Image (cartoon, rainbow, N blue to C red; front, side, top):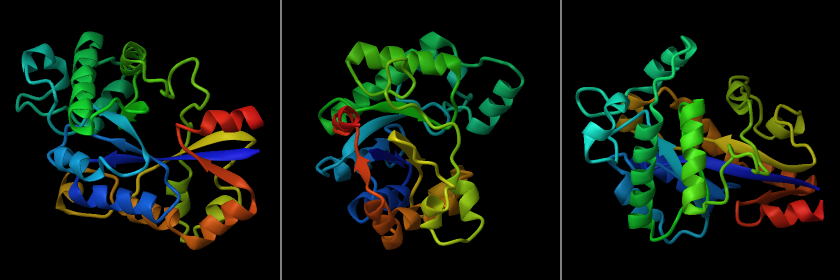
Length: 256
């Protein structure tokens, strides 16, 4: 049996991105969505999506916007002088140079504040936890430790995780070909082996906030269209690929 766990990242990034993600799970094939809790639109986004019937997770963000930690003296290496996170572009450059610019204690403190913010507005723990933008071994360790501390069972970086983060995101190269969205699946651009596979997506609409702060813009529109495409839905059904969320995928593993 083949199962596909589709995750849509970045609820809260902006009003348009949030609207696009909601459309992708209300009208499309998304069953899991990650929330960024530190952005200017995040609180309103959480109030909007709180009652939606979908599996929500914490999309930990350390590279855009303002930290959740109110005492910036506790996280000096994570921020600019203006109190905003250091951008992912700078962080990727540092990591390429072999640097490890994320002190564990500071990362842990900020993630813990993001967890608390999530609970405050969503009224419960996230059902999973993952990372936005930049992955580093120190950040990953902090995320895994936080997941363990709070009893969050689903974290794709832990040793016992049954679904690991994919190494590549082939759909973004595929969109440049302008081919029908169903061919992403039917022509093997995206491999779906036996078992449960994870597909990380970034659907969304476009607004000024996104244009000014993100390098991932136009592909969000393509991603939304692909996730809502009727031919894609039909192909998945015809090929008996089960769409699952973090709540239910374990039972499908037992059936395989």
